[in-house]
Length: 193
Image 1: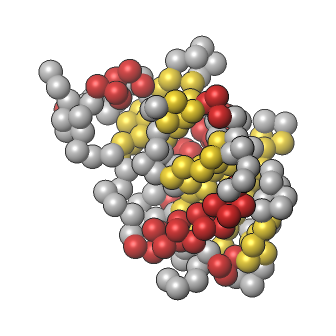
Image 2: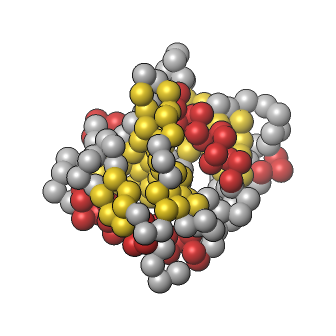
């Protein structure tokens, strides 16, 4: 039977990427260690404005480098220790520098850098589930952008554990630890909202 609606899935069951590929859902979903999570239908305009502003900064910085930038919807498949894919996420923005991780379906393995923008209804997902998933997968740097508070909360991977750095707020500069020359004013993320 073809799966075309989330209501056809048993949300208590664990699924794989192979299952995910067979679904023809109207809803956008992500898999977190085999569990299905529905994504918000479409991000609010402010979310898209912030993403555009961040992408402008990243695009200029990474333009002549061997890294590629992608933004949702873009499947990032994170295999478990046995090589089975039970986690498929769609980060708001991700940077992949190991181009062998890219294929026609997206990325297989941890991106080097991920940015997630909080939206109403996804705060727990970004702050709890994805934090743990990205840490375990080995993402080098993870920024969580808080539109309401107008700040960016950076995390860097050290010895397999995310360490939270001081949040960068309005009037301050945010600098990537993984890419130290990537640095800009936080105000530029929240301009013209």
